[in-house]
Image 1 (cartoon, helix red, strand yellow):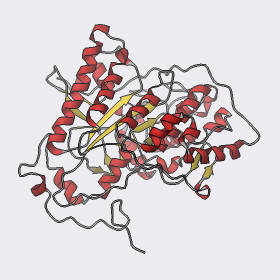
Image 2 (cartoon, helix red, strand yellow):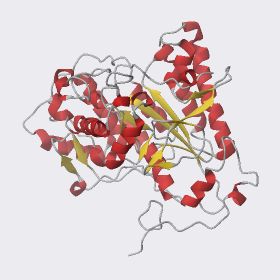
Image 3 (cartoon, helix red, strand yellow):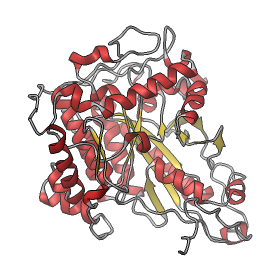
Image 4 (tube, one colour):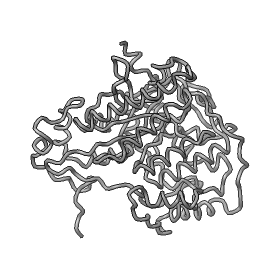
Length: 448
């Protein structure tokens, strides 16, 4: 089967449909009110806009972890106009540990979302709930223009396009407020906020595949700026800030349509990114390329077909209903089952084989009747509570990889797709492990 069919990439995403715009929120206290709300966000999830029951579940987590202690007021620092704030270390971010000699690696699974935003479908909030219920954290690749209102669209200056141009539109007051709330709560629950950049330009005629390193740097800087200034652009001065420093939080991305990766990686590395998920790979252990982890999506079995399929909802859709996202309703159930079963087959051959991380990409969309959202949820519920399985964000996976002995990772990369060590894990990884360099994640704590 031709590669163009096997590895279709997202060419167009329709602009999200938002509800009626909410009124602008202003007030004389401005940033000071935002700072106070930042403190409340850290102290109590309920103060950030969720109910008491939901706050309790988020605080305890599926493993009944102890509630996270609030950050001291001295640790809270409002940034810029108060759209973001430093509130201390991220809650529920586990400290990675090195594999011990002979230890079997955990099975990592990463669920990630391109262009993450909350609209009338409420899929962002829904999958936050699914993650909490199944001991999972995820990565949300935010599109920067989802934090920019339509009437301020000219603030976006896309490379090789006129000001105010975007192939996925912009947002309204209600959509920005709802998205900010979900980002705030997601981060407090241990999830990661990455970027899907801004205008989602693909193909020829100024698409991201034609951008220079300098243009990519400009696009990244604009994506950061829209997140760091959403209060100013919307006038919501009294809204609670996002409880993180986005300049430090943003360490990875996935490019639109998986295009433009070569120059993007050059730009991103210089801007402090630690990983990229814009490629296509087999189910093998990741490598570092040009100083960044290559955490590409992967090819998994495609039930009913002789070729494999990329672990992304859009690709399943294209190879099932073609160019339309509203295919034959009689086939919606079958198509969702194919995606679910394909992902589960990919999971099983890693879990029982080389234990390579399984990396999955999706969109908050109801294509073909929402069948792919059903499939993803079923996979989360099926795999994330199994022994030795860790459903994590890309940040957590990168932290774990950084903490490992490079020689151990090199050995893991000798295992092919689905290949378990013939002599068993204890023998395969039995050699002495080099000590972790001081300061590397997972290194022993330094005694005073």
